[in-house]
Amino acid sequence: MTSFQKKLMAGLAVMTLLSPLGIFLPRTFNAYDAWGEWGTDKIEKLIGYVPEGMKKIAEIWKAPVPDYNFGREDSPMSTQMFSYIASGLLGIIVVVIVIYLISRLIVKNDK
Image 1 (cartoon, rainbow, N blue to C red):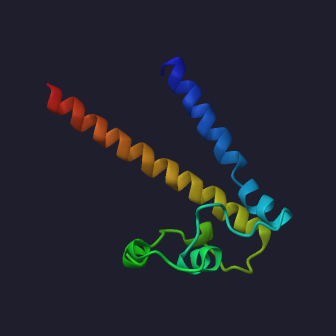
Image 2 (tube, rainbow, N blue to C red):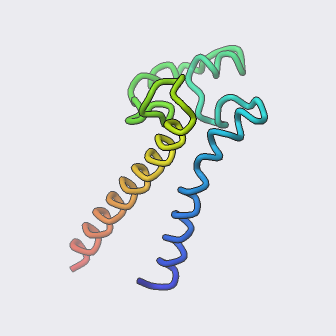
Image 3 (cartoon, one colour):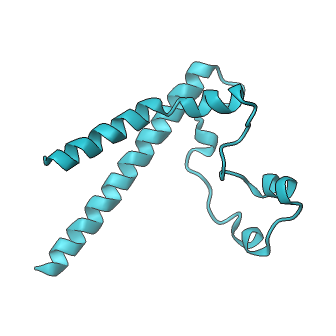
């Protein structure tokens, strides 16, 4: 593993461990939702309408782990923290696998 790869892995590990801040900070500052993670209902409240393009594609993608929570909204904070970290790890694993597969295809096609 190169020095760059080690730094990249360390950075990903630190971000994963810091991910529970995403649960605490919005509650602490009464920010509610994370910026940009809004549904059509929140967009309508923020700007007064829902853009037509957003209406068309709003129901196409469903999150594999809605709200980063495997439990219910009223789950204990420890369950929510575990879910949040597990969601982050799941996302990292999926991205690493996709990048690996794409890079293997590129290398295979270059030969």
